[in-house]
Image 1 (cartoon, one colour):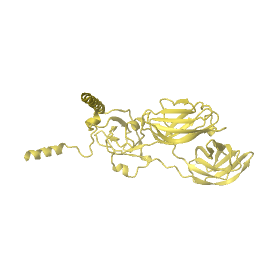
Image 2 (tube, helix red, strand yellow):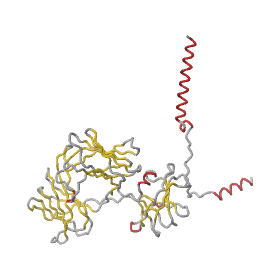
Image 3 (cartoon, rainbow, N blue to C red):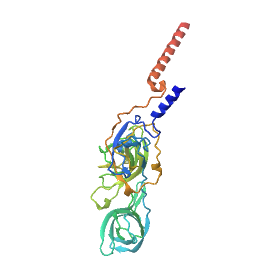
Image 4 (cartoon, rainbow, N blue to C red):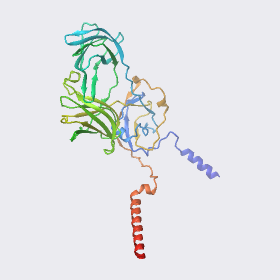
Length: 404
């Protein structure tokens, strides 16, 4: 009895606390570089983290220099401001252009987008936007294209005008080729997706009436929120389907849309090829676009740029450095931290961190294989079954021959 008590006490003395972490099941590790500060640490996942961690980062752990866990959370994406109707002070015509002066109100706010109320049908117009505070001197903000045209899939219409963010009180809008501007709504600065750099360009091939464009993002499960598609062909309007795959064999449909370019559709007045943006919700290594050319020639100079919104993570501050991130355990349960449930700190209190190079965890040990013998050696079982079937067939044939 005394020996049992001593053994129990010894086990309790050397037992790990509940919050201690066994790092052996985690395949990958990397440093989390942070400045000398106690502020919460803001950092952005990269393709390696997306590709080797579970979706949602349920197997991600951050450890400090003493081996203790550093709580972390996923930050929510900022919401886009709601469009607000603005007053039209003056509306009329100057030559062949409809002109309107819009009053955005005395409160200073950054604006970047207008949606115009235009009653016309069948037009393509290059709209100029100018800003002013005193209604005497004007600053040119952008030249954008609006349109309403008939296409192969019906009418395509867009009266959205974007311009560089500004806080002017008044905006003057000039739209050649339309009868009038009846009103407008204005939007503030909204989060926009950023381009995902690619090591290799798109692979373009044409077979029959279909052109296929394939992208390789190097790692599986990489989030993509939109695709910008452009071509050098001067004018086109064609259906396109988008698919995603993580192994290059099994493809999942993501979107059906159209790629188009109309006459005079020069983006924002700049000397560059305009793009069609296709929204998707993909988490794949490979993306494939199939463009239906109909009886037209394939598009020339096709380019596709994948875009993604920022999905930053926030780690708690005040832990001894250096910090490291570990991940790559498919069986790990998602962490549960108070830090993830409490209100997030204000962005002004964040410290900017970054992930260092990925490497294999030196303590990694693969989990034991708990599958049955048949599951672990399916090929051996298959061969044994084939041999048994052949033996049974041979025995049956021999028995029939003896009877004969």
